[in-house]
Amino acid sequence: MVRSYKRGNGKRKYAQYDEDDVKAAIDAVKDGMSQAEASRRFSIPRGTLQNKIKETHSKKVGRPTVLSQDEESVIVMTLAEVAKWGYPMTHEEIKMTIKMYLDKQGRKEGRFKNNLPGDEFIRSFVLRNQLSYRSPGNIKRARAKVGVEELNNFFKNVREVLVDTEPANIFNFDETNITDDPGLKRVLVPRGIGRVERVQEHSKSISIMACGSATGLLLPPFVVYKAQNIYENWTKNGPSGSKYAATKNGWFDRNTFERWFFEIFLPTVSSTPGKKVLIGDNLASHFSVEVVQAAICSDVYFTALPPNTTHLTQPLDIAVFRPMKVMWKRILDEWRNESRRQGTLPKEVFPSLLAKLWEDVSHVVEKNLQSGFRKAGLCPFNPEEVLKIIPDAVTSTEENVGRILDQSLITLLQQNRGRNDQQKPRRGRKFQPGVAITVADCSPNLDPSKKIPDQQPSTSGVCNPSEVVSDDDDNKCANCSEEFDTYTGPEWLQCVYCLKWVCGHCNGGFYDPSFCCSVCN
Image (cartoon, rainbow, N blue to C red; front, side, top):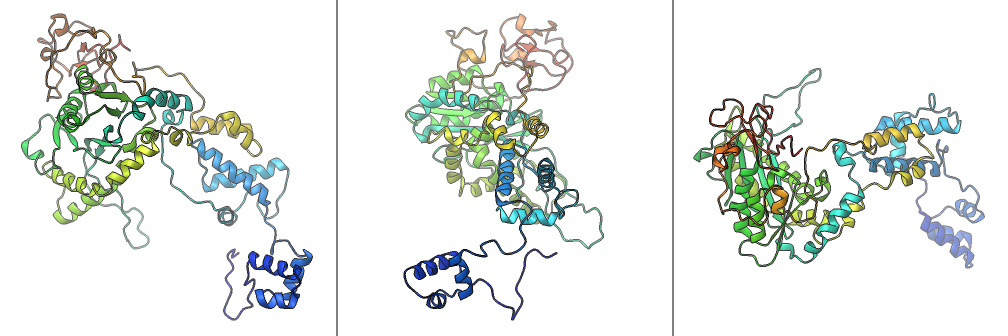
């Protein structure tokens, strides 16, 4: 059955007036104008005008809907509430919700089969209530469990320093990755072809450290390749001021983060007067004693975001990385079409494409960064920007939704959203969000009064205890006392808290830039 009626040519015309015309005509009649004159002046049929004055035939034309307007409003409210929980409903789930509502009311709707609405009804329901189909972003359950208390504590800790700092001195850093896969594109093929594939090779992504200020300044990128060594032609023709490094797994570790801090961030802010605020992930591998001491000497307030909140509080995540990666896919696709190059993206070509990306991003990054800092509530300082999108307490939500959804469905939604708080073993210490990071936070066993000699960060990603220790005991594995000089096996790891080394046999042979030994854990 066609639900959207279209009038054919030569057919009778209906309702060429609106409610404002009707109201004006009725007022004119009450003021003494004749009905005939009001009908001509406002282009309303006289019979219709008489019905409006007598308030007859006031119901909506056509067959009444299955659900009243109030009932549909309640269901729409339910959809909004469960979407806040992180469990937005699909087309089929809305149909089941309406069926559940009718069943609970004890109603038998003859227009539905077993009280289950059809697709045509849902499409009309969507149009009547101005709903829209959206593609939701997926977040992990740990992020879904973020509550108001954690965010309030963070903003409380960081309030004073943010309010007293100029926007040009507030920075956010974050690591992202750029892949050489241009993604999926729609193609035209004849009907009947079952599986459509495109030959497109791609390799592991390349890590990039980005940093921007609240006024819209984007710093040069720091690139980390997945390789044992780095070659000169991998560093040519990139963005001005960019730096390059290589690690075994292609991730940022403590050494590469130190290089970024000393070679890109500090030179940028060294001549800027006043306190600087640097906000980033709560990753222990990013904070070493050398970095924190240099930050203190340079009047940099180094602080971490609350865990699992970067989708809410990280300006780069909120407003910069997505448009940047859309631009990157276009640049990569253009390069593949022009070069006709088979295989993965060569590392010697990557810097030139990155330079084009940084040039294209420069046209929009100022506005995007300012928007990101504003939505994160950091600049201007306004925690309500973040707190207003956190779901309300479960109790208040149950009061709203309980009229429709039974307790079993409420429990299901809570579990999917992650509201059932289950204790999970901690991997190690976390920095208190919003509070300035100190030397003692990075190395609990170190005397804060002891001055560490100035030194440049290592440019190598290889873990070599003999290069960084002075005591004989520290040249041995903290677990099994295996000596490094006679050791053969997987790579050693250094604990990010106590700075002791653990051999590859004891650490399981898995590389983890935020490794925490068994004692600190």
